[in-house]
Image 1 (cartoon, rainbow, N blue to C red):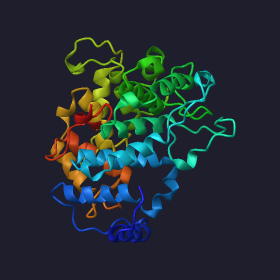
Image 2: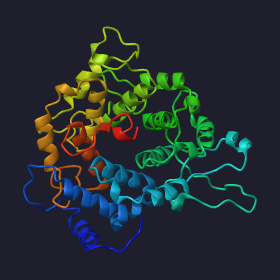
Image 3: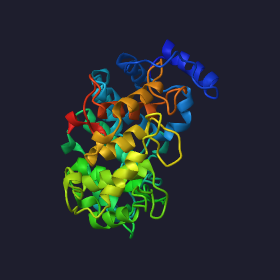
Image 4: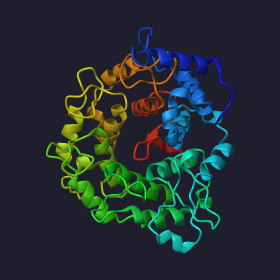
Length: 370
């Protein structure tokens, strides 16, 4: 969404250019979650992104998801023009010319931005179809958040063509022209199927086997088989399994689990990620980072192990990353960004912060829209 630059936005550009290498010069961290400042921060991001986001233009749909879903978590979705948002999001979907095109190897999901969306040629053929699994997940999450009627979505094109992206080992590439395969894109595919209420877009059994092959000796999950355990990869694995119905509710109370993952070892790995400063690290021997308060916290919530988190220590850490301008930074004392701000709000929702909408962490959107 574009609009006139506000005084806050101009100040933001100035601050980001002068402070990006020096850290944010702030007053001592607040003792409270500054809800009004966070709403103002997200409103600014929704209306006009500061100039230093230019390099992220291709991910504009993802940035919109962070801003709009963040406003919903903060109880401020009334600041969003829902009709304008739905029209914009729907305009980014790639459409086949006919049913036969759905099996031509391409993916007919959503483009990440207008810059990756090229018009068809004179014969109606998409000469460059850049639709992406992650962008499609974000598009559907936005539409779900604003209450759009999914009966009007071209789900057949999305689901049928999404099968073209699943590889023989069960993993997914995010775009038909080829890219890396890892747990992130299995998660996107599972979340898309779940939101559309139709699992015809993926082979769940193959996906499950790939996920299980990613669990490491220490209990966490790497993004690919044999790789180091990682907070984001662990979330993608566990959330995908539960979305697919392969992890039981309250799994910690089960004597035997049908999911075939090593739950006690996974729980231990997750709890070890809470560091001495109260925050969560994404990998062993790494500093605490705002976003992992969600990634690891959500895994623990799914496993019913969130009760073991030192919530007061986590809250204190997160408040050191809260900016006086609204939003959250990756580390204490740095400038906030949209990515870490959204996951900061999600983390506070897991902490049951008063005034925040509760989060359904398997999709990380508010429970109220499901």
